[in-house]
Length: 350
Image (cartoon, rainbow, N blue to C red; front, side, top):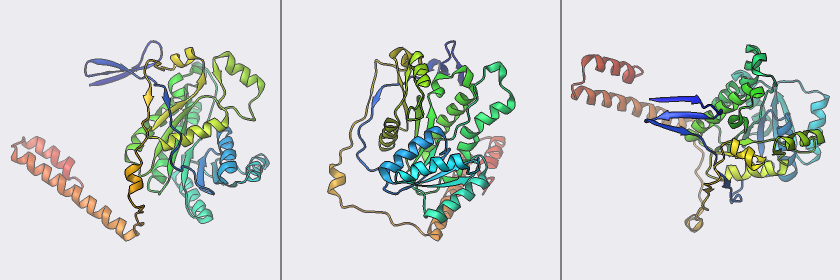
């Protein structure tokens, strides 16, 4: 039996196997990326690309990799968006802006098709969509909560469902320290980030490509005002320069860790987030000797009929396994009522 609730100081506590457990954050030093993460002129889809973090990330990808970027957003392409795109294209990138709603499957599928028609394939995906509304708990309305939740919850589910079978190099969720901080005036956003973090961890276990979640603190950059920097300093935080944010993404995708937190803050603030300074995660470099000794090889792509044969074979094997398990229960003289329930569960789709 497991129970989960928020402790008196705000942290999440779980009761499991007669013991209390709480979450902690451990300091980690990510090694420099040993393998290529971004391609020259790679095609990268950014949900929420026109947002603050999306623009900063796009500019760096344009400058360093001459990336071809697909921005998905709900708003129509206007002069302000056009000015953002011009800045990125003058830095060496290309931007395709598509009006699409990440929470609607048909809209997202249409955008993916348009991307492939325009550039042929998609190499990587960033979920950077956010909806922020600052309000105290007693000021929230049901509609306001849903507006903030949807990009991080429903939008995450629809995006994953649409792209899970693509041959991506990586899939990155740009989340927030609100998952751990839980600011009362950003309650809905904190809940959405917490959902996205948990969903991505589950998705990472079955995905065909690296799935990473990065919980960022506060991004800086050219658009940060002096007032904003002063406010952050007053509450114990420091802005993350965009170039450091990009390096965090590169090293995170190249590392075995599925989730990392990047935040610049005073030690007491980090402690309030649950950082345990007494322990540290150490990433051990991969021994490349055997890999270098073996000849390079690549797996040829499978044709559609081959993939369909594999799918049908897997389904047939699963059905056979269900029947075999049911027969085993029957030989063990399991009660008739239990066998009937098992028959419904195991063989309902046979």
